[in-house]
Image (cartoon, rainbow, N blue to C red; front, side, top):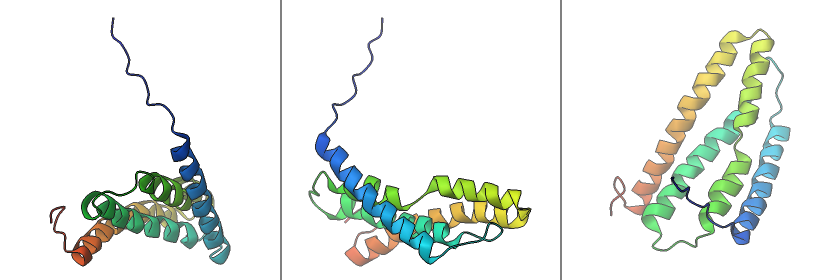
Length: 143
C-alpha cells in the first residue's frame, strides 16, 4: 500500500499576502481596462498590455528573487508573483476575448491575438530576465 504525501499546512500569512497582492493587481488591471476599452471586433489592447507587462515584470522579479537578492523575505514571491502579478495578468479574459473575436467574425484578428500574445509574452519574460541580469551584472543566472 502506498502512502500519499500530506500537503503542506496552510500558512495564513501567505494566504493574506496573496489576497492583498491579488486585490492590488486586480484593481490595476481593472484601471487598465477602463483606460483602454475595446470593441468586440478589435484587439483588446488593455488585456494584451496587462499580460505583456505582467510577463516582463515576472521575468524581472524571478531574477531578483533567485539570483540577486541574498535572502529575500519569504513572502515577497507570493505577494508580488502570485498576488500582484497574478491579479494583474489575465489568461481568462484573454481566452474569452479570443472567443469573442472569433464570434464577431474577425478570425484573422482572433488568431493574430491568440498567437501574438503568447509569443510577445514569452519574449517579455525573457527580456525582463535579460535586462535585469544586464543591469545587475548577472550573466545567465551566475554572478
